[in-house]
Length: 79
Image 1 (spheres, rainbow, N blue to C red):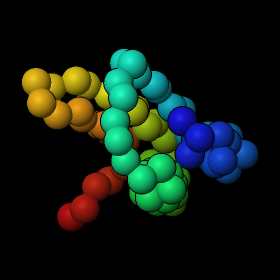
Image 2 (image 1 turned 30 degrees about the vertical axis):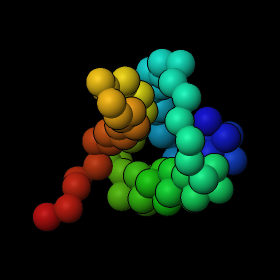
Image 3 (image 1 turned 30 degrees about the horizontal axis):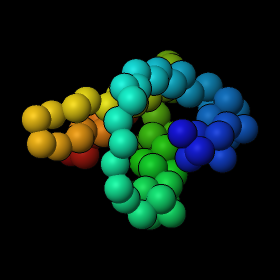
């Protein structure tokens, strides 16, 4: 993901562990908007991470008629 490579230095500095589980899926989307959205999610994950170890898992699943991009982190979430 180009969004990860663009944030690599910051991800390393904050100790973020990233797990990727990608299937080969082709989707039609606006690449710039998708990168912007992912950068915002990464930024939020880094800013609101748990001090004992930040983790972000990114994976893709192929549904019957949809594609799913799933991002999970171990942050505190929204109260």
